[in-house]
Length: 532
Image (cartoon, rainbow, N blue to C red; front, side, top):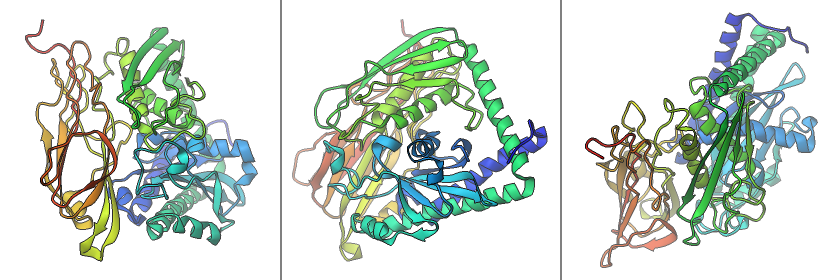
C-alpha cells in the first residue's frame, strides 16, 4: 500500500482525534471488563493504538510511566523475532522486567491488527494483575531476586491464530492466588484489543489506508518539528541534578540517582551515569522503563499540551549504565521499580529549572506510598484477599500558584485510590479517617500542596506490607522555597507500643489494629514572606 505525500489538514485533524478516541474506547472496555479493583477502581492500566511499525497513533489517559513503553515493547519483539512473528489472531503476553522494564505484575498484551489481509497496526494494553505467584501475596517488599517476584514471561502467544493456548492459560491460572481473576483480567485486556481492532478497521474503511497513512505521517512530522523548535529555545549546555532514595528496602543505604542533561541545538540527552549500581532490593528496572520515565519528564516540559504520537521523543536520547538501577540485569529484583523513576522525573525538572523557570515546579511528594493488606475475610467464608492501594500526596508549587493538594504521584497519572465504600465492602477493614494533612506542604511565596491522611482499622487480623519513600529527602523547594514534610506511619496494635516504619513485608497485625498513613507535602516556590 502506498500513500500520498500529504493529507487534507481538516482530514488530518479528524483522523488525529479518531486515533485518540479509539484509544479511549479501548481503555473504557478494559476498565469495564476487569475483574479486580486495582484495574476497575484504581485504573492501574494504559492502552495504546500503534501503527504497523509499532509507533504510537493514540494513547488513552492512563499511567504516564507507560508513555511510549508499549511501542518499545512491540519494536523489541520485532527486532528479536521479525515482524512476521505477529500473525492474525495472535495475543502476545509479556511481563519480563528486563524487556518491558516494569515489575512482573504489569502485564503487556499485544494484538496485531489486520485489515484486508495485511498487518496495519497493533492494539496494546498494560494492566497491573493483583497476583502473579510471587513468594508473598501481591508484591513482596523484601524480594532480593526476580525469581521471588512471580511468574516471568518472555513474549508468549496465549492465543495463536485466534486459538486459545489452554495449557499456557491453565499454567498461569494455577500459579496465581487469584487464578480466576487473573484470567478475567487477561480477557479484559483482550476485549480492549478487539475494541481497538474494530474501531481502527472502521476508520480504515471510512477513509482508506492511503489517507490514514498520509494523515499519520503529517501528525508525526508536526510533533517532531514542534519539539525541535522547543528544544532550540533552551540554551545549549549541561544541566545536572542528583538525589537519592531512602534505601532499597533491604538495607539502610541510600540509593543514588545522578542525572546530566545535555542540550545541543534541537537535541536533548539525559545521561544517568553515576547512578547506583543495581541493588539487592527491588528498586531496579529494565532500561525500557527508564526511557519511558525520561519521556514523562521530557513531556512535562516540552509541549505538554500535545498528545503523544510516533513523532514525539525523536529529539530525546536516554543513556544509563548497564547493570545500574536504571538498566538492571538478571537476577535483579524489580517490584518497586517506580521509586527511582519518580525521583528521576523530579530531578529532570530540577536540572532544567534555571533555564525553564516558566515550566518548572518544586518537587512533589514523590512515590506511590503503597499499603498492602492480606488475610482471610470471615464475612465471606474466610476467602483470601489482597488489597493494594497507592496514596495521594502534595505536589510542588511553581511561579504563579501553590501546589496541588492530595494528587496521585507523577508516575501514576489517572490512577485512583479506592472509594471508601468500595474498600470497606470488599475487605474486612474500616477506613475511619481520610483527609488533607494540613500544613504539610513546604512554605514559600507559593506553598507546596498538602499530603493526605488515611486511617485503617482492622476488624480482623491481617498481614501488612508497606512501601513508603522520601522520608529522608522530602520534596525540595525551588528559588528559596522550603521542603515539604516527610511521610509518617503509625501502627497501633492493642496492648503494644506504637510503631513507625516506612517499609515492611507481610507484618502480622492483630484484630483492632490501627494503621495511620500520612503522605508528604510538595515543596514551596520562592522565599516565604518575611524570610531573609
